[in-house]
Length: 115
Ligand code: 5GP
Ligand code: ZN
Picture: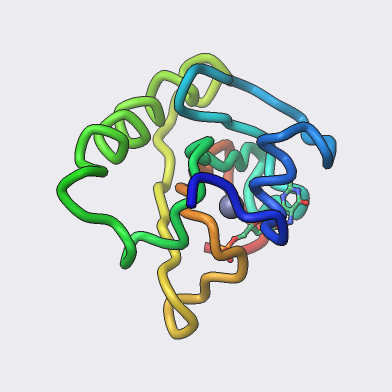
């Protein structure tokens, strides 16, 4: 399944729900989190529906590599110069609320709301 009609991030990828985009390419979409914890808080989301990090396999190695290597480029682009935090909440006990794989990237001057 490459897209899930009930998934909020699939709807954002499809343009059915608006988002504040910061980057898009063939595989990935990046947009600002609607409820930011930090002055800069973006979500790196694959266009394809993958439920979580726990649902990834060898076929996702390149995708995961691209998601992670994009993070520092985005932070530089968004003016974050003093470090950033990368989080992948996975599963219920991991605090995952949206069941579509995503990488949180947070930065900007502290204090932050959370994290
Ligand atoms: P999780 O807890 O699954 O790791 O994180 C999901 C994140 O998605 C949360 O930080 C939440 O604020 C964000 N989020 C949920 N719904 C929307 C939405 O409709 N638009 C945007 N931009 N972010 C969302
Ligand atoms: Zn999805």
